[in-house]
Image (cartoon, rainbow, N blue to C red; front, side, top):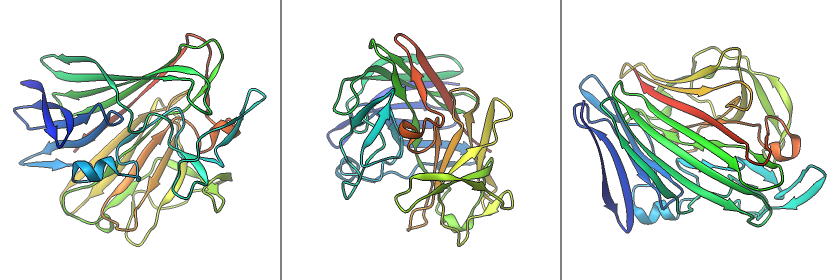
Length: 315
């Protein structure tokens, strides 16, 4: 195996590419745009599949409001009216969702990340990026956030995040990743999905949790004529669960494995956009609006950290 890491230009943006020359497996990262993965390609057999749907041009990527591939920290999804109460104090976040109704998807989106390290080994290559949150509006805490992207010789792509509280006060923290997945040139209606959950979060009209209810579907289930925009409580009996996106026509399955257990990825959002040309599968460490409900919320004391990994494989 022969790995390399190099820079390339995407308009005015500078990308980092991790590539394995034998298979062509590669990921393309944009540190200065929220540290996102713009492209991920993994091989099965003779075919190299591009697995992420992101806006196709630099300008459309910069203008993207759909959070394609974005890292969501220190909260994911919506906080109604941008208001939350933490340890007896009330806070007001910037209402940045379209329509200005809610705060959505955290504070590191589209921020410029630092490149901390680039590492090449015989069996893997990785890039580590970081961003420091320092008392922004509505979140008066100091938290160092980092993400490590690793491409392995066996075809695994691993995203590992870590957050460390550098402030003196306890800080609330939640992390999620927001990729839109594609399988070849097929529409999502051609695929099946295997969601590792028996319990779905019940939303109100503002997509805020109001309870839970059973999730009773065939597993895997056909996506055809189904519209998902749901959060699930995953079956966390072991230390991980795996969501499968399946194309029987192409004989491929994308596996998205998330760590589970205390402080890990115990929730999952699945979303089918109206165009039905991709599926968003978003591992979360806490429930939607956990800053208010506390469901799954990590509370970091001074000097304490939290971390977790998401692993993608194509079989």
